Amino acid sequence: MRDLFFLAMLPVLMYLMARRPFIAVGMWIWTALFFPNAWLYGFANNFRYNLIFTAITILGYLVMKDKPKVNFGSLGALVLLFFLWTLASSAMGEGVPAVTWELMTRFFKVILLFVFVVLIVDKKLHIDFFLWCVVLSVGFFGGLEALKYIASGGGHKIDGFAGHVLGDRNELALAFVIILPICYYLLQQYGKQSKYLRFGLLGLMGLLIAAIVGTQSRGGFIAMLVLAGYFFLKSDRKIVLAVFSIVLAAVLSQFVSSEWTSRMDTIGTADSDQSFMGRVVAWKLSFILAMNHPFFGGGFKALENFAIWIELSKDFFAYPFFYTGDALPDANAPHAAHSVYFQVLGDHGFVGLAIYLAMLARAFLLARSIAVRAKKHVELNWIASLATMLQLSVFAFCVGGAALSFAYFELMFAIYGLLLVLDTRILPRALKQTAAA
Image (cartoon, rainbow, N blue to C red; front, side, top):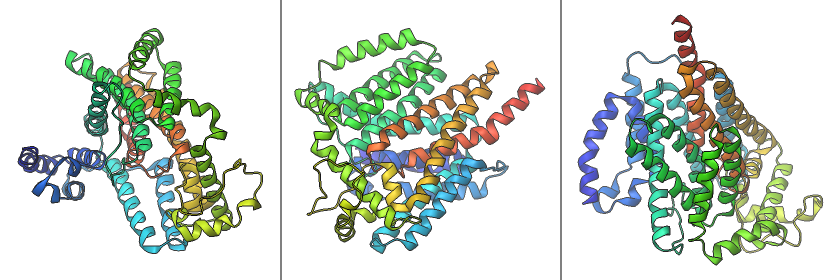
C-alpha cells in the first residue's frame, strides 16, 4: 500500500517540481536525507529517486525564466575552492582509486546541491519549503524512532538505515541536533498561525531530544548540551526555555536505562575508555598521514586502507607529543578518522584542513553578520531569526563533528547555500525595499 501511494504521488511531485524548481531543490534534500528506498518494497524500491529529482532540478533551472543573479561571495569561493582541492587530493592520493573516485563522485553531488541551492532559492517561501523538507526527512525519522523509544520504556535503541548517509547512530544523533534550531525557526514563523503546527513542532523538538538520548551517542549528547547552553545565552525567553528543559529532563529520566547511564558516565573518564582512546589513535594516524603528505593528504578514506593503516602505524611512536595513553593501532583492521577535522586533515592535508576550517568559520560569522544587520529592522525579524538558527546549526556541527567522520554532510553544505542566498540576495533586496518604504 505504501508503494502504491508513493508511486501514485510521484507524477504529481514531478509535475510540481518541473513547474517550480525550488520544489525540486527541496525534494532533492528530502530524498538525500530521508532515503525513501528504505521505506519502500517491491517495484517502487527500484527507482533512484534522488537521481530523478536531481535531474528535474537541473532541467528546471535551465528552462527557468528570470533566473536570479548569482554571487557566490567569500563563502561560496571557499566551498568551491575546497571542492577543487579535494579533486586534486583525489588525483594525488595513495588510496584505492576505485574507492577514492567513488567518494569523490558522492562529494561532487553534495557540491552540486550547494550550487543549485544558490542558483534557485530566492525567496522566503523557497527557504521555508526547503527547511520543511529537511524537517520532514530527518525530523520525521527521529520523531518516529523516539516514539518507539518511549513506548519501549527506553529499551529501543535508535539506529540509522544501513548504507545510508545517516546509517551510523552517532551521525544520526548529530543530524537530530543540527535540525533542532531549524525546527525552532519554523515554530517562530508558523506557530502563531496554527496551534496544530505549534504543538506539532514543539512535540517534534521534544521527540528529537528523546531520539538523541535513544541513540546512546555520547558525541550527540554532548553536542545537544552545548547547543542548549549556547541557545540559552542567545534566547530572549530564558525562563520559558529553562522550565521546558527541566520538565523534559524529568520526563526523559524515567526512560533512560542503566546501560545509557553507564555509557554517559564514561565521558568523564575518556582517557581510560577504550572506545574513545581508539579514536585518539585514529586521530594520530590521520596526523601522521598528513605529515607524510602535507599538501594533498592521502585522498578520500586513505586511512581506512589497511595497507596504509599498517604503514602509518610504523611511525606511531615518532610523535610522542600526541598522547594516546596505552592505546595502540589495531593490527587487524583500519578505522575511520572519527573527527571531521582529522578526517579532512588525513584526506586532504594541512592545506585542505585550512580551507575547511575557513569555510566553517566564514559560515558561522556570516550568519552572525546577517542577523545583526537584519535585527535593525523589525520587518526583517524573520531573516535575523533564520540566520541565528542556522548559526546554531553550524555551531552544533562544529562541536559534534569533533568526534565523527562526517565532514561531507549534505545538509551542512545546503546550509552554506542558504546563508549565501540570504547574504547576497534576500537581505540586500529587503534592506533596499525597507529604505524605499
